Amino acid sequence: MQPKNPHILDIAQFAQARNQFDAIIDVRSPAEFALDHIPGSINYPVLNNEERAQIGTLYKQVSPFAAKKLGAAMVSRNIAQHLEQSMLNHPREWRPLIYCWRGGERSGAFTHVLNRIGWKAMQLEGGYQGFRRIVIDDLDLAAKQFQFQVICGMTGTGKTRILHELQSLGAQVLDLEGLAIHRGSVLGNEPDSEQPSQKGFETALWNALQSLDPSKPVFIESESKKVGGVHIPDALMETIRNGLCIELRSSLPTRVSWLLHEYHHFLENTAQFKEKLGLLTTRYGKVQIAEWFNQIDAGDFNPLVTDLLVKHYDPAYQSSIVRNFPKYRADFFTELLDDGDIAFKNAAKDILSQFSKVRASN
Image 1 (cartoon, rainbow, N blue to C red):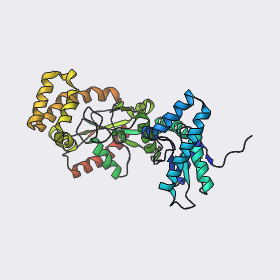
Image 2: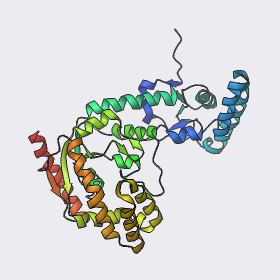
Image 3: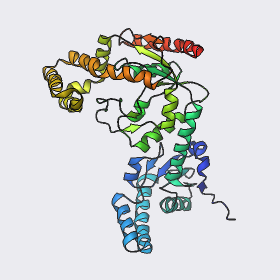
Image 4: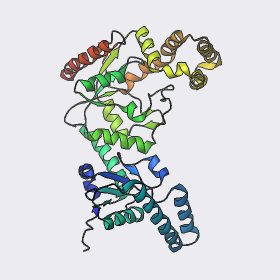
C-alpha cells in the first residue's frame, strides 16, 4: 500500500479545511475558471485558453509525449510568471491550496514548485471535479435537512427587500435571485451583469447554504423552477415548495412605485425595455405590444407598469401560487403599507411574529 502524499488534501476534508488556507489557487484556464470555480479562489492559469487548446490538439493528432513536452515548457513559463508577478512578497508561512480539473498534472506541477521553494502548498485531491461532486451531494442533502419559510406575494411587493430586512433582524435568509443575478421574470436581468452558468449558480447556492444552520428555519422568496437562465435543483425546489408560506401584500400604487424605483434602468434605457417587452408578442399580440411601446415613448411609465401588473404578472402569480405551493393559505399574510424604509421594517417584524401562527396551524 502506497503511503499517502502529505501534499494532497483529501477531497472529503475540503469543506472543513478550506478556511485553513491563505489562498485557494485555480490553475485551470481562464475559460474553465469563468464557467465555475471554488468560491474565493483566484485564477493563476498554467495554460491559457489558447495554449490548452493547442496542447489538446497535439495530444490527439500527434502523441501524448509530444503534448507533454510542449505543455511542460508552457506550464513552466507560466508558473515562473505567476511567481514573479504575484507571489514574491508572500512569507514563508503562506499556505495555498492548489487545484485543476482533476487534481492531476497542472496542479501537481504548481504544487511541486511551491513546495520546493519552501511554502507548505497542498494539492486538492480530485480537483474541480471532486469539488463538483461535493456540491451535488450537499445540495441533495440540503433538500432533506433544511426547512424553508416562504415569502409569497405578487410582483412589486418587495419580497427581496423583505428578505434583507429579515436578515437584519437575525433571521436566516437564502436570496435565490441574488445568487442567480436575476429577478426572475422577462424583465429580470440585472443591468451590466451576466448570470452565472448553471454550475456557477449551484456553487453559489452551495456556498450560501454552508453558512446556514439546518436546525433553524430559512426564509426564502417564492420562485419558479427557473430564475432567468438557471434552474433550482429539483430536490431543493420540491423542499422549498413544501415550505410554510406567508403572503406579502401591498396596494397596486405602492407596487408600481416600488417597481419604478427598482427597475429605473429600464426607464433610462428604453430601447432595452422595448426589447424585453417584445418577447411577449406571441402572448399578447402586436397591437398590445405597440400600445406599450407608445407608452414608453411618451414616458407614461406609471400606467404602463400598472397595465403590465394587471394583465401579465398578477394573473401568472394567481394561477401558479396555489398549484405550486400546497401550504399557501390566503388568510396568512402581512401588509406592506407603502414602499418606505419604515414600512418594510414593520412588515418584516410582522412576518416573524406571523410565522409562529403559521407553524402552529400546520
